[in-house]
Length: 277
Ligand code: DGL
Image 1 (cartoon, rainbow, N blue to C red):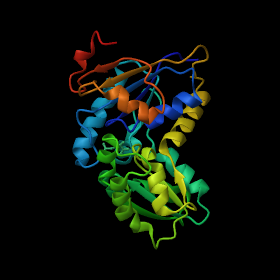
Image 2 (tube, rainbow, N blue to C red; image 1 turned 90 degrees about the vertical axis):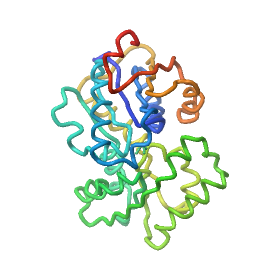
Image 3 (cartoon, protein in one colour; image 1 turned 120 degrees about the vertical axis):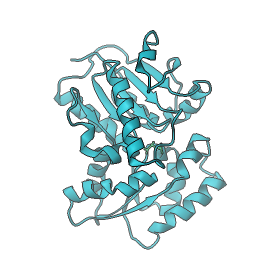
């Protein structure tokens, strides 16, 4: 048993789709979330910048003595790859492997689509992970850079015409590819799942990285005998930009109320954390 919190981070709000699934699956766990709202988006930045930000985010959560770190960001998971968990003194996972494993297992034809940020698609990491499980798989990637700002700005209603228009253009990539599975390779995308489904067709299975990662984390903690076994879990939120308004938008991602205060911190200056915990 380990009563310490699970640390979860993302560039902004998208990682809350992982928190939502985690708190449903493991209601006794305490969760600390860091959303790097002051530096979102990551997905349009260079590899070097993404690595720098990700390392700062990881150090920040490690300094809070969490028992496990989840990079709830497709971009960080794709760009860091195996180095995410290498040399770490506690379990650490991204969203890529859980989603790739689910797609490889669920696809009947092995024709799998992946949508994500430009950095995620450019990395080719999903294709590599899927082909290491199913070498014959054909993986078709498409970057969707406007999806993150649309989601962060609340353009998520299933009938939102602007998001439909953007989705129609991006997802036309798959029109003649005959995919049977599509990975939502960015943790923001489950928020517009219905819109995406409308443009790829109802016969395509959508893989939600939040759900798959929560299951993966639960297994990891169970196998390591690190689950919290008593009481109701609590949560704590940190952001790097103005916390005002965070709770309102976050509630849309969580599909419930935010159950704590939201505290502003600077990931480049962890010393400033003192007194905020
Ligand atoms: N939620 C992050 C991801 O999964 C992304 C967005 C971003 O910062 O560009 O990729």
